[in-house]
Each structure stands twice: as C-alpha cells, then as structure tokens.
Figure 1 (cartoon, rainbow, N blue to C red):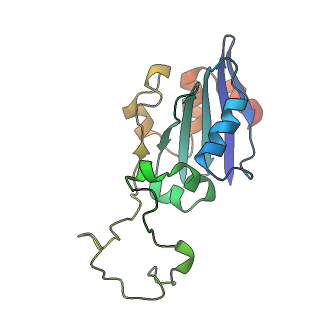
Figure 2: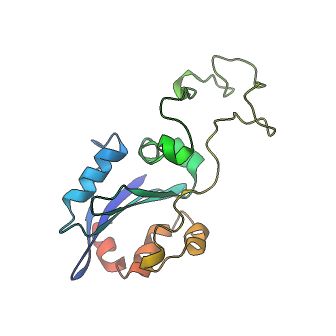
Length: 178
C-alpha cells in the first residue's frame, strides 16, 4: 500500500495535502504537481512511502531542481512510484543507457533465462547496473529543517514519514491527510 502527501511551507507553518500519483509518470510531472500547491516559491516536500518497504522525499525550493532521497533504492525500483524518483542522474547512469527490462526477466531473474554469470556482473555476482539495497540521493535534503542526514538514514520505513513530520512540526497536518 502506498501513501503520498505534499507538505508546503507557508508563513503560517506547514500545510498538507494528500495526492494521487496515478497520472504522474516522471519526476518533472511530480515537480509540477508539487509546485501547484506552493505559494510564492516556498519549500514543498513530497513524501512517499510503500508500507514497510521504502520511503522517499522530494524537495522543491522555488524553481530549483528537485532534490531526492530514497531510503532503499532497490525496493523503490520495484515500485512504479519509486521508479519516478530513481532518475538516471540519481543512479549515476548516462541518460539512454540500456538497462535490463524487468518484464523480460525469466523467473530465475536473468534475461530470457540466460545463465546468471555475465561479464557485466560485479564481484558479488550482481549485475553491474543493479540498483543498490541502500539509501540513495541527497541525505542532507532536510538538514536545514531539523532532520540531519544521520537521522534520516536511521529512519525505519515503517514510521519514517511520521518522524519527519514530527521533526518539522507538521505531524498534525500530515495526520489529517493520512
């Protein structure tokens, strides 16, 4: 189960709104959606979680490029919403690099049933372009809002959004849309 909310900072504090991501296909779409709730180019946070698996934070400050943090990149890569956040830049890939199509993988996890050993595997036997089972992105995304990188990385996916909202002083407004 997914939950997504927008938190917009205003003169009066944080305002929350739940959001549907069904029509969002790219990070640019998500940024446009977030900017629609912003008044006067204030900070907007997009908080996304998949129950007990991963969470993500996208931060927009005015017209600046979005900043992204994902708690478990590999788990997010298996999610349609997570794929929106895992841009080529975030993954350290050149745009247009050929990445194995997950739909073409056989049950053994290899493309078209081919053997698991490949020249492109790293020393752990993982594909060289595999998405890591670790946090990815800007760990300092919330530093100036009271959640340091160390605290952000230590959050458990189960209660991360609540902990972030509490640190921001926005737990009540987030709970109203949850």
